[in-house]
Length: 527
Image (cartoon, rainbow, N blue to C red; front, side):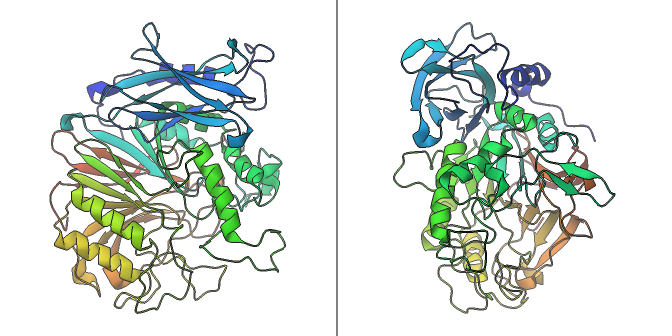
């Protein structure tokens, strides 16, 4: 299927940009030909995050202590530029850092380059690394397009150069998105990467390996190494230089199916550190160091993953954290459950922000699905990991909190809510309808699932009837842990038309092929 025509502000020639980005991002582990001895290098590329109509965060990592300097321009030539001095990069943040750009023009393409200067001699700097991004439009007619997915380097399927590495990022870049919603499991800190893995057809998957990825992550250095591992992929680095991210986390940034207060069984010999809270604190620090996030910057005393990103008159993105504040995984049959999967404080925040939103569409970015049953295999077959617990009757356990939220959305007459998620390693579309549900005090809505990006694919999850979901599309393998070589790698695209306000969701395969399309009209329910 051909892509729709692009609005005027997307007229940038992406081919030339991709070429320049590729030159600017040398293969990790090798010194670029133009590097001068003793000067800082940015081998891990650049990225931007949490971009607004007049600001954005630029990220870089140096190979040694350096001062971060960011130059911006309206053109690739950088004939007229603005220069901003950023932080000193050192071991305290694993030589990563972000610089906030302020006072940017709305709805415009911003070109930037990052220089790393010797802190003792600013005249000695490495070659600049370039990137670009679009600021959020101030006017509705400019439209919004973005992509989403999750689950990267899971189940031991890492970067295989013979397969083409993380080539799904090239397909996502071709849709020319305004941003990428990275829907959790951004790394697999609990998933070691071995040199080879056997494929069903007798072939061999050959991973790039690193020391930090040879075991489960426990130390801060090992968690940091998990994020660096993904940046070894040239497609990922090039994508980061072109497309801003909105990142959220789920369980594999720490450990499979974790929850606060959990203790790792003594019989699990992979871990010497048994406190999941200790592991989570280290993972959270590394996560904040390796993604440019407005609410979780290195050095902040109190940071958080949940936040709302306002993307102009057409769209607000509500990023949830369904991991940090949840209660313990259980059978999910409680008749009273005030903490739930979000915690009371985050639930209150979400209600307030939804009620004050004036955007046409309110995308709720959930790192776990609502009506799909996700068992906690580590705790036992009867425990549930997400919201749905398999009983199609009245809400119980964590479903009680979701019922409270859905009721609030209905009674406050909040329109345009769409749920996007990943986590389950297949792609699907579910329509939730009160006439089919055991709990009916809500307005109909859609939930779209995508992923994995580069991980094992799994069969479709069963549905729980409490909120009346109907699966109108699904693509998933029949077997568990199908490798990326076997297909079933997915991403989703959302395109909001600036004229009609219609929101179109496309579920796509690894090469960009459209599998399913759904068009939603603004201001309506039950569609």
